[in-house]
Length: 115
Length: 114
Image (cartoon, rainbow over all chains, first blue to last red; front, top):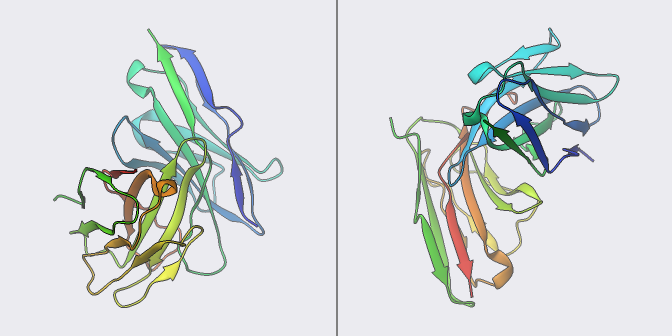
């Protein structure tokens, strides 16, 4: 069965410091991987995705993520955090077989960036 | 463009009552989805539709039904609400075709069943 794990409920960083939000996955075969962000009382917004090719994916708002097949991970990173990055972040995975559109989401990680 | 709209924004519903959550998209996306978001559980897929006229069950379909009469609308119905259906409900859509397309989410409906 497909699954996604975000091992940290909350990540705290100081503004200007690098941030990492962790994600590991379990899926048969090669996955499609996604990161979404949710601001308070809003829907999810797409940040970036990995399809194939370069393991380092760049997305919106200066975020990037690194696909590591051997560690089955897709950690979200940003070199310099902003207070406005504070939000709830979701990792999601989708297997390459079938076309049902079923994204499996992690439980979410709250990012707090303090001034 | 508006993208995806959901109505109502929030609702308090008595147990046993029925309710339909509305979702409309103006992006002409083929695929649409309903998720519920619960603290500590992330988002779980309730039902989906790959194209108008077709629907499928997701991870937690019990107690919910959907229809897809046209491309734009994808209503979610609770026939007889129970307190465990208290949640935030998100509708989403994607262009379809390629399964790696990202999904676009509506603002959500906060439902409380008492």
